[in-house]
Image (cartoon, rainbow, N blue to C red; front, side):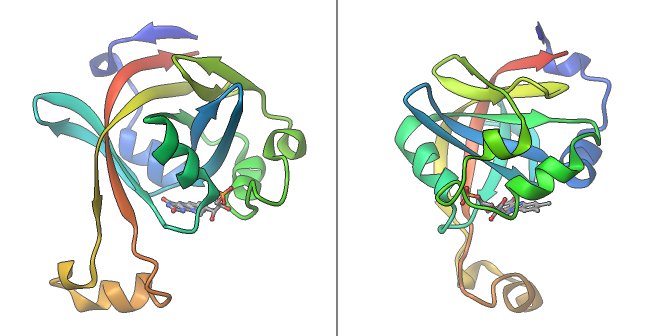
Amino acid sequence: MKEINIRDLKENVLKMISDDWALLTAGNESGFNTMTVSWGGIGELWGKDVAFIFVRPQRYTKEFIDREKMMTLSFFSGEYKKELGFCGKKSGRDCDKMKETGFTPVFSDGTTYIKEASHVLILKTLAVTDITPDSFLDKTIDESCYPNKDYHKVYIAEIVKTLEK
Ligand SMILES: Cc1cc2nc3c(=O)[nH]c(=O)nc-3n(C[C@H](O)[C@H](O)[C@H](O)COP(=O)(O)O)c2cc1C
C-alpha cells in the first residue's frame, strides 16, 4: 500500500461504495470488528475531506467505532463479493470474520484495515448525529428503510490518509 492524495484517485467513488461495497472496520490489536457497507459518501465539510458513514444501532462494529474514534474503509474493486456478502450478513458477535473469509487485518494508525483491499481510507471521527423519524420530507423512506425503527447513526469522519495498492 502506498499513500496517495485523495484528489488523485482515478476510481469512481460512487461505484466504489454503492456497487462494489466496502468494509468498515474499527478497533485495534486488542480487538476489532468489520462489517460491509454500501451506503455513504465522500466529500467536503468544515474545511476537511470527509467520509459520511451510516450505521444502524444494532451493529457490533458500532461498539468499536464509538470506543476508538478511528476507523477505516477498505475497498475491493468488485473482487471478494462473496466475502463482503458474508461480512454483511453475519455478526462479529457470532463468528470470526477474518477466519471465515481469509481476510488479513493490518493494524495501523491506531486502527485496522484489510490487507486484500485495493484502496483504504483511514478515518478519524469528527461528529456523530442521528437520522430521526422527523428528518424525512419524503415519508416513504421511513416506511421502506426503517420498518424496525432502527435509524442510522451518521458518522462524519475526516480522511486522514488514503492508501492505494
Ligand atoms: C451490501 C451490504 C451493504 C450494507 N451496508 C450497510 C450500511 O451502510 N450500514 C449498516 O449499518 N449496515 C449495512 N449492512 C449490514 C451490515 O453489514 C450487517 O448487518 C453486518 O452483519 C453487521 O455486522 P456486525 O454486527 O459484525 O457489525 C450492509 C450489508 C450488505 C450486505
